[in-house]
Amino acid sequence: MTKSELIAMYAKSRDRKRKDAEADVNFIFDTICASLAEGEKVVLTGFGTFDVRDRKEKTLSESPHRRSDSASCRKSTCVQGRQRSERSCESERKGLIFLS
Image 1 (cartoon, one colour):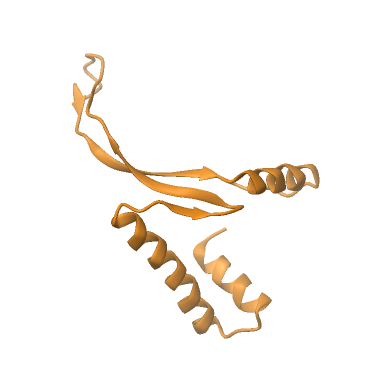
Image 2 (cartoon, helix red, strand yellow):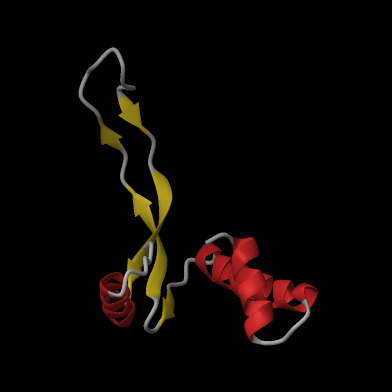
């Protein structure tokens, strides 16, 4: 599902104009991104947990096809919530697909 498809589905299900639905979805995403940028953990019960972690610098094996090292960086992570996992399993049994 793309962001555009999510907006269209939300607008249709809530009987809202697409422009208003887009503003709502953007507000949610912007709020999540701002919280992550400030180093906060975002917990959406039943969906997942998002946070940003520092990744250590690591040395890769010497190979002509690989860089010898990689710089440390910040990496965002998402852990799927248990309720969402259970819904995913039920949906897969029904022939629906959830991507995590």
